[in-house]
Length: 299
Image (cartoon, rainbow, N blue to C red; front, side):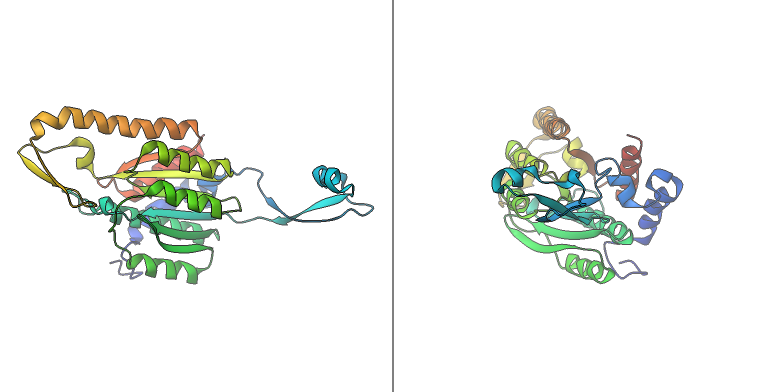
């Protein structure tokens, strides 16, 4: 627990290091939004609201010629100011996220810390942030808002979340992509243990609708290095199945398949203009985030 805030997933010393990045690097001096969104959202300051009939003196650049073709009448596009970013964090709470080997925290706890840091920085910059947690279904769904009260409620709800069911990432992402009508930033935090092609099609669904997407692929270090030496029995946290293996015989094949899994996501995300961030629970999450923001800022 953080003695200053009372929130389990909001360590003040971690936030201090992240905020120091925005103070040192002028490119992210406005905090998270400047560092993370300046490039993809450059020039995106207004959003279409409605039509009204053309009157003398209106700027002809705002005429809607498609409406003219359909109705044979002149209409002007009206816009509303769009000064704050809308961000939806999607946190995977499936059973596999409850795994840890020798790390101090599980993948889910790591994702919850990261969620809290991102949400804090966004609200601090007056961005609107929402939270969706899911396994086979959507379990918690909080729309994006920018108030401190909303942030406090988000932290309270996050405290009550625990990983449990099996994984169905792609259907959840498709459902959310159909629901979000206005352009926003989607942040997915997951171990991505699902059919890779299906997940990428779902992520591309967001891109097709002009959303920006960042994927934080979270592992336990043991899932990457496979440090086991003796005969070991593995327990599937989602299905309950057990499998006994001799690490000596499976290590090379396992490591190769994990590398292919990671490279598959890295390559397809790059091709779809999706930011892919690989991390594991041995990496301080605040350090990882600061490094990522600094990297984006110099693009």
